[in-house]
Length: 307
Image 1 (tube, rainbow, N blue to C red):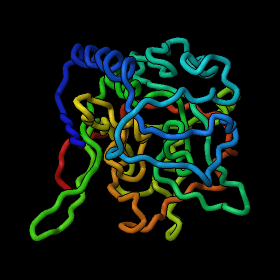
Image 2 (spheres, rainbow, N blue to C red):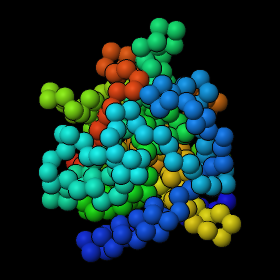
Image 3 (cartoon, rainbow, N blue to C red):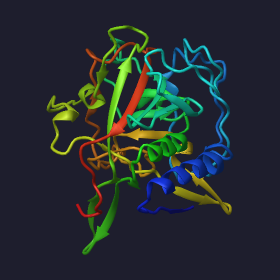
Image 4 (tube, rainbow, N blue to C red):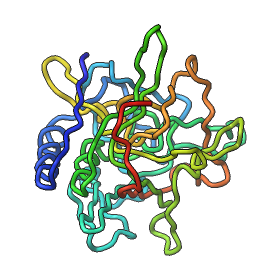
């Protein structure tokens, strides 16, 4: 499979036009995915972390079945009800994705898929912050049914510019060099139990810490996220938005398909880099807890490929 990506500089009008094009061509018409045999009888409120599967972008894309509604959701899977905490100015511009252009805010709902309170398996290693159903639920803080391509389009609507996810390159003589992600800075926050009057936003990097050093991800120099923008991949003469198939909506490890990428580049392969990032047992709520994810412009951008 051959993947291509670009980093154009867009005017405000071009961003809106691009958002509409993405929603119609990529999100509304075709979504990449991988053939699988999902257990449709498994309750969404009780994810089976032991049998979770992962994908990579080298697998041929296919169509995903519509996932079951999130627990507590009152709308249909295609048209979920807005969060009760959402301000009146928020509008659902794509299924499940709400935008307030004036306040530069993108919002969508999900739930906690991992169980960090199980005494038999208290240490949960993380590779993504947010993913889609039937992808990386066993290593993610949030699972959602929104399409990453729709979130991409919504970020364009609030003025953010996509770049590219992180990657690696080979320098002479055969030296592997990490390439940091590019794109507008994105501030990510989570609101657990958003219907509660005292619900507060929290930086997801505060919920992730190093199993060896105990340092939180938020304490790293340069910690944060950028609008990597995933990539367009070609398969059998057709183009697909890669993150719609891989499920990597908000990354932590570097898969190369993330819509929103963590600034630090590290491999998800245990043979390359020992897994160290785990979920905070004391601060991550129970599996099945509803979550609202909020995205805003960050305070700085990364626009270079140089390490």
